[in-house]
Length: 167
Image (cartoon, rainbow, N blue to C red):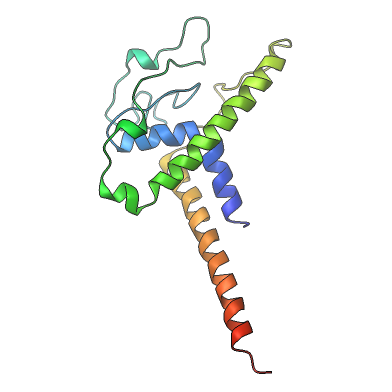
């Protein structure tokens, strides 16, 4: 559980960037949400100069009046055809975790932003935010897989010892 928790939290908190990263791997841009992949060379699958081969479109431009909000695009991961490795590597599970985390983070940010607008001291995404990259996502997935494998091995070894002990 000590390994699964940090991996699940990382995918959940950075769910928007992970979904954009996955969309970039699948050859399409999936960028909907504030701050997902803003910047230059972020490796998150959107933005300018990230190696994904995609340029800046009108969907990447900020909405008038808010510098940190990005317009929603119509493409989603569900509408993109996926190769077999997508399923073999468990990406439906990882994207579901990221979607749930993205939804919950957006709710928390909206609640916090609503309270912070009164003080004007809050910025959900600022220029000092570190944007995640693919290596960090794969480390989080490794932590989740290692935690699950360790939990299964621990339970299986305890069951084996209880069934085969000499009384």
